[in-house]
Length: 488
Image 1 (tube, rainbow, N blue to C red):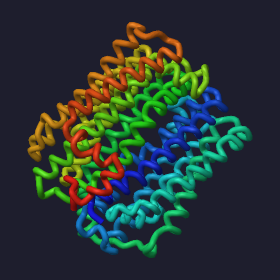
Image 2: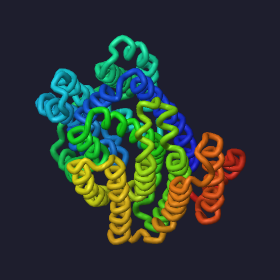
Image 3: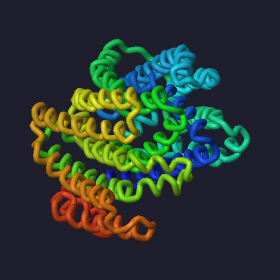
Image 4: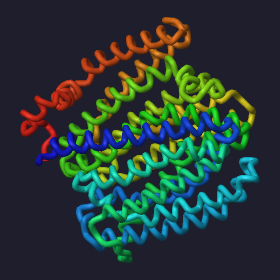
């Protein structure tokens, strides 16, 4: 089977999994948010912030090296990776446990200390997962990964309402997230082909560290980027404010996270295969960049036009205040999705410093966000700060990709134009109330802007028009798959 067929099949499989997984998480969050008060939902958000803190800032990118390295299939490689996972999980768990009391006090929720301590179980459980499922991704075998992800999501989503009805506070989140982690652990072992084995090869360990130290720094930066604003809100505003901001952030992030997860897993092996051929890599990168930009434009428009109404409809009127800033959060996620193409291309070339450097610029947004939090400014200024940081990160990552690897600057600039114009148009329409404010008017306005953006994108993006559309026509793709421009 040639690479184009594998990409098509992998994309379909991962798209289905990611769509269902994100839908289940979304439904679960909606159930919890509707059952709990904004204050309790805010406390649940602080628990998640703590649970992910040390995990994100200690990521050595071992999973990505397993996919990227030529010898990633070797058993000694996997055994050393497995041992590193376990040691990392134990260390993270210990740190999270020790931070439980300070975190509970920092968020002004001392009664939640035990819940913060139980969050320390999550990295330990993750460290015991079998890494064979990661190895399968090298060969674009995503079936076991899909099962290990979907089954826990389905079970915990079905259990969300009974647990929330029974508990009726933030402990709902603790119970569900630990149950999901345990099920994922068990399935990772049941679905693996190789025996669970720990090893310790010093040379391999140095490779992991050399490959991963920029990702380690990047993890710290990413945590600040993804969660820093909510830390500031949690410590400078009320738990109710944090609950409102969290539901808006989650709603805006869900579709872009869905697309980013699919594109990252599918396109990293596609680009890694041609890392020695710069011309072919740039060609594939162009197609990825234009495709992600087209999707980003389609996602941001509805949030800018009707984001506030969507939040109130989905989560309830008690979260309606999110309408004042969800458009900026969507624009921030739009830029993040666009720059995902450059990060994937850089990692495929072994340049893990690119996303690290880009995120250094992105983290500068925490400075104005801190200023806004200290002075009690409206939450919209924290969202605007995040958007400005994403733009800086995009420019920095694009510049390094050109200087370090010779990837043409116009590729990224050309890709960014359509979503930028789409967001600007939607913002103007929303700001001046063009088209009305009832649901029918909002729907028609959104549909018109989406249609114009789609037409403009097909005219402007030559690679989308020339390469992607034939793939989407399934019959044509099957007949002509041997003649595609992406071949192994």
